[in-house]
Image 1: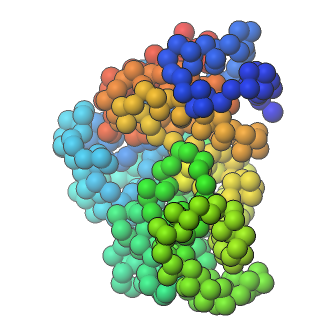
Image 2: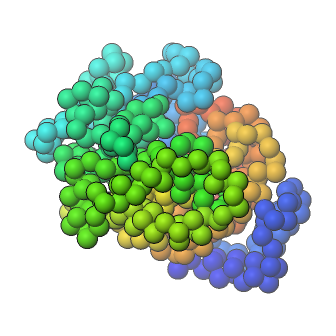
Length: 458
């Protein structure tokens, strides 16, 4: 247990104050958090950063790592694989890439030399882009981390399988909604893969086994899409009533394929029978119910099938990650399996019930981005959310808070880098280097030098 927790919780209990409810920022917020700073001894935090292969290919491995270490005190870095989007993510131009203004990635590529004998029906795809093909970027990346005495990681991004194959030779892997239609994810509208499909499970487990068994990694991070819902719900930081999730779930989510039917039956849940009831719920007028005044809990109590269905999806996610963990620990018992919690406050409705899911992971990246929105009031909202998140985690695993370094307001970023240190987190994760102004990295360092961990950065 981390010693800081007792002091922090006692302080908050005595004040009886919630940061967001106070509606404060600036000097008052700092004073509330800094009240416990005296006589505080801390371990050095992990300051991680995400890097894409095109970043190091264009700027040079040395330049990228020099910038991260010198400008933002980064001591941990991870290379992203299985990406499926254009970079920079929010459009515009790369701020410091000397070769290109933007880059459209190929879907769901890995950037190491795989052992194809480990894979079954589904094989990983390597990049065929001229400046990326033929290089084992994971190997080069890990070696650079070790040379600089940094932690080394790999991330498996959203798109485990490319949309071309999911719409073609692997279309039987797609999640099906309550009416039997393909579930489209918020990952650029690509199909979502079914987590209960044996071929998909074999492929995912093999990816972990492959990269962990061949490289000297400290952690493997993932932000896999489990059972998807609209993106606007996935980025909520508030802990509002769950009614909208309960209403949209049957309309938009899956899965009702034959593999899910079989897995549910083995768990004692008749998914076929539940499907008929969920179809009725999916045809309701969402807006009318939202306006009726009924609470999410009352609505769920009125329709018990919802909880059974959501619980089954959580069990499905846990089952997959149980298999991942078992094989990963065979390769390296010390490997850190890290979950990027981009699902925010309502992960349960997408298949991730953190209190149970934490049995299958070792650390969490708490993804709550506000820095790019240019609203100083959101600093307090972020701190309040992270304190709530710390209570959910309850010392069961290590966790780090994500900082979005791609915005333009460096004062907000500096404040977040200072104040989020008091939320119980064990460090920060900076996302993403390629789209960040170098001045933003300096803002992170300034915040760190005023944070709970200042003694480590003077």
